[in-house]
Length: 110
Image 1 (tube, rainbow, N blue to C red):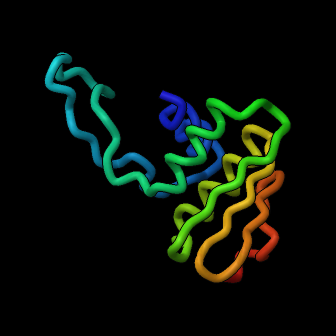
Image 2 (cartoon, rainbow, N blue to C red):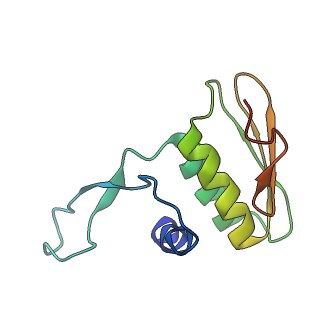
């Protein structure tokens, strides 16, 4: 539910990506619009959502990744950092990305 809420806020800010675009309907629920479980969401997005749920407000959320961050995830982290006004640090294969207030320390070059 948190990712759905964040996605709607990101779309208001112009996001045109594919966060949660694939859904699998729950076997125990009716086939209503919006029901289902997101699949195809990258692990760093899931880690960020978990961090937003459990880490106290104001604390930096750190995510480690053993692969290069894709451009869609990079854009998502920038937008969410502006929406929730928190800082995120992501270590991918090549560098550290420090997201704060809608921008990244790599200046979108990675």
